[in-house]
Length: 428
Ligand SMILES: [Zn+2]
Ligand SMILES: [Zn+2]
Image (cartoon, rainbow, N blue to C red):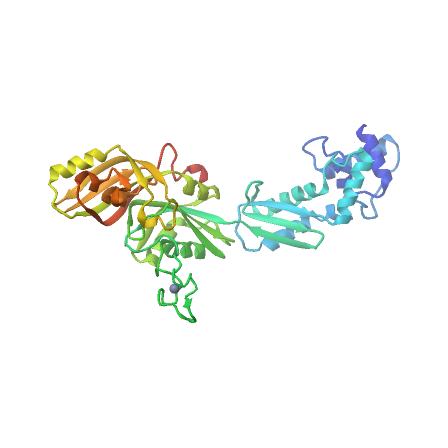
């Protein structure tokens, strides 16, 4: 069927606007708007048939004037977004049932196929979106836009959904006794109450510890972004009593419903330092996209620890060095440690000791650095966990070993990938 016959049929059906007319042949002349297609067809039909150009006086029977309202809808969308900062957007439309039915009827009648041409919804999305982008100097994004604008024509409302913003960084934990995330009190299950009284386990706070890395970092970022809430995602975690030193451990803070996104990350570093008062500090802070959360959580990390150990009998230096050398490069069999067996399944795992070195030693104490594969239990590698970890330093020395303190001094991605993958960062 040629376009002129399509146009004649559409014009015969009733008063129709240029955009609705053009939408019937949206698959022709790429690059034109439907409005321009419709207008051209209307002119050509009048010339070929030598009839006066039909002026559309009555509202279009298909869209009832919706296609004339794109400028106004874009203005309303900008108003609905208000002062929320965004760089990317996506527009969705719910047209009224009546218009949706007319739109299908039109294309069925004219093209014999409701899928021919273009649905009115997708035209509204594109045309309002184009105007919104030009008015706010932002761009459309179909994957994961900063804001989603839903034009609900049925309810005569505009709904704005603001997607989360993400900040990547590394934290250093300089004091022991701080968990990574909020840790609800066991005794009251986090309620702060026990038998109607203030819980003695937590003094009513509901948390086992007053502070956490999360609570020292996330609220500062949430406030800077004007968000509703914030979630902390770490690349693994160290024990509560272990410090996190060196370059620090990668993390991502996810801020829900942020009003600001393009925050100055170097300023944030200072603000967090002030807020955390020496307990925690952050570095390498950068704006990131949503994929960074999964990346940081899933990427296998190899860690280097420093274990401060004491021996229950004096150990000569040559014997200690010999035992340490025998652990280097070894695959260690570890039955789930006794200390975590109440919350983890009892499994046998194998992990490699990449490197192990003696940092310093006396006859009764030593500091040993261990670079191990992700998941290697370091404390058990030292004390042997009553034979559940094999080989171990205690096993090789044939004496009791106690771990007095443990620090993480490095967390690096295993293999080719890096935590701070450029693809996942947002340029300032
Ligand atoms: Zn129309
Ligand atoms: Zn409690």
